[in-house]
Image (cartoon, rainbow, N blue to C red; front, side, top):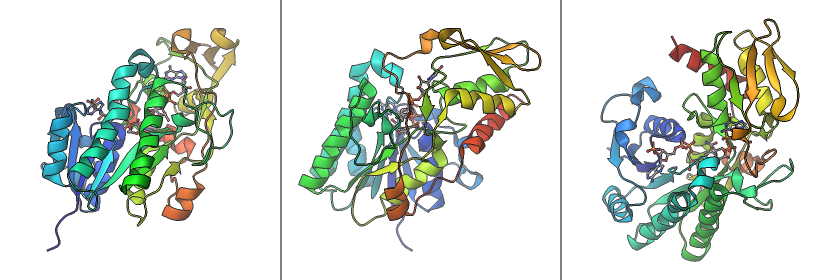
Length: 342
Ligand code: NAP
Ligand code: F7E
């Protein structure tokens, strides 16, 4: 019998952690998952065949506890590590830049050092979850691996830090490390701290008399894909003979306003907008009930206006492509939240 390949996924309790664990189990990996509190891991997020107890080896470990983390890597000797753990919320990074830097920048660097110190560099391949935030404001320009990077908030800076460091580890120390430059990707498992899930949770739970949904910048445009598709890209990127960096994106973007409209449409309501800026209001076109209000508390000091990515390198070299379009994504998230409400 061939020995199972071991994979270690940090951030297993997060959105991508669930999809990736499912994918790896389906491919026959021995899956080890790490997070601060693994008791929060929801097996219900996995496909039925993967839900059997004991199929994932869970390890409670804070990434800032370097000694414990290093010991785990030494013990598991994973062939693949997917470093998904992060403080991933942009506004929180502005309030807590130091914590963000510890987890998003320093921990991946320590992880790369650990792989080398333990002599695992010929054995372990590492995937790092970089972000389209590293490009900063590009004025709607289509972004590829070669685009100018100008991070403009602590989250973006922390991801840029680990991205640049990893290129040194790869070029100068021979480490097999890949950056996935991930554009926004969403799913029913997205945390409600992010705008898409905030919208679908609210739309799924509001009747006509409920409080309006309060949002910030309705004109912000994002290249939104589905997390299920992006974790496939992560896996594909570690199967190549030579490590490299890849943009994962759909190639189209949509506004927060469009997301709201589609979500309400899926429940049979049409939004009529009136006013502008912080005074803009979204009404139910039939009943006149207020559905959406703008709340400046959700505006960001240096928000990025629009992102759109060019994933042609991943498409050509990894044979990767996003399978879920924008309308399907909105619908899947909304239907899932409506089902949760019974
Ligand atoms: P997520 O849902 O926020 O999950 C983050 C994970 O990191 C959670 O499991 C969290 O554990 C864990 N974590 C946070 N701090 C930790 C610490 N100190 N020690 C150990 N674990 C810790 O993120 P995601 O959406 O799945 O994204 C996965 C990765 O892709 C992240 O690195 C993110 O920055 C990056 N990324 C995501 C997107 C996107 O659109 N989703 C786009 C670009 C890049 P708890 O459950 O304890 O909080
Ligand atoms: O904001 C606007 C907000 O918080 C999207 C993370 O996964 O993707 C994600 O970061 C847009 C922004 O995601 C609200 O101003 C309006 O323009 O959903 P978000 P994000 O900041 O793009 C990148 C690639 C990552 O790497 C990150 O980890 O929506 N917006 N109104 C709002 N945003 C929020 N959260 N809440 C609102 O009420």
